[in-house]
Length: 429
Image (cartoon, rainbow, N blue to C red; front, side, top):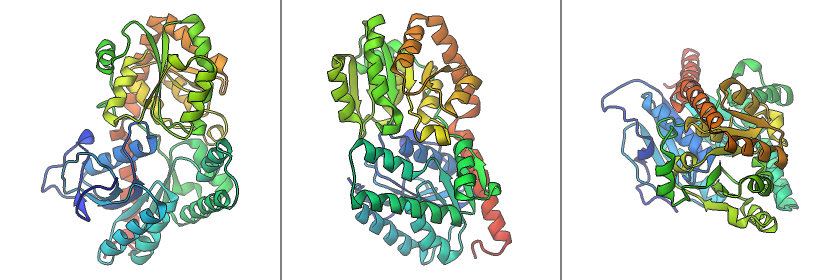
């Protein structure tokens, strides 16, 4: 659904409100070019973008964004939103190009910030090259790997899959070559960019993901369960996120019978939606645990903390393919920990270090339902251990991985790149 708004209006999500007082000056003009086509709390990519937009705007920057959100917004002078269609890539491309041409015939930005190579290329072609605007590219993963995993799980083949993969690869290579600075969310991604793409190490800065510690914070479990209509006496295990192949949800479903053998009152909350939903539901029925798993579907972002708070243990069963190669900076794990919940997560680079440093959870062998079940049942049996891990994880995330911290670091990169280009005579004129 497209927003019923004028062609360009100032918008601000009320769930992320950090108002900058009118009349304040300073900051950068940033073209933030990633299409935001939904705002469900289980969509980590959209959550990341919204939180980063919020944090950058709160630091007195002015952003031009592209969104199809059908949500309430708060007006501000610091965010200009161009509505986009919710479906159809060609329509989406056309909408963004029209907006860029309409504004950028006269408008110059200090930096172009992109988290999506497909659309980042548009920003560079229709703004970067026209005005000499520097480009900052954030890399959270590699589209070719993601598309391959999705195709493998849905038997996609033929020319369409080949074209999709080719476009992903070409756009990534183009943008990484053009970028003036690159932000990698893991050290593994940085290493991969250097070794496989030949990117200059000096261009890359590692900035991990974060959590909104204003809403992902410890809460009252009983109140959260009453609010959601959950059984007060049950034991709940929670997963939140996009049901994508690399999330390892089938392994969690296979762990459910093992968990329930020890804890018959255990229930699993799968919060979100995605391409693996039907496969996971069918597997649950096949294993006879369909009644032990609650598929919530997509939920509003502000409701996600309720499900985490209502739970006893939270799980992130990532698979090795794609994840182990580049490492992970997992949004969901930061959010679990922000709510003070112990985490059981795959022993993947990035996750392993996070759990070890924070003391907030247990790393287990990836793609091993028995290992998941053993760690979960151990935590369900030990309330003191759950509380100890929850406190440690919450303290760590609050100090190191709030979105305020992330936005400050990203803002510093943006300012440095813009200043360098201005000194070189290639900034705004």
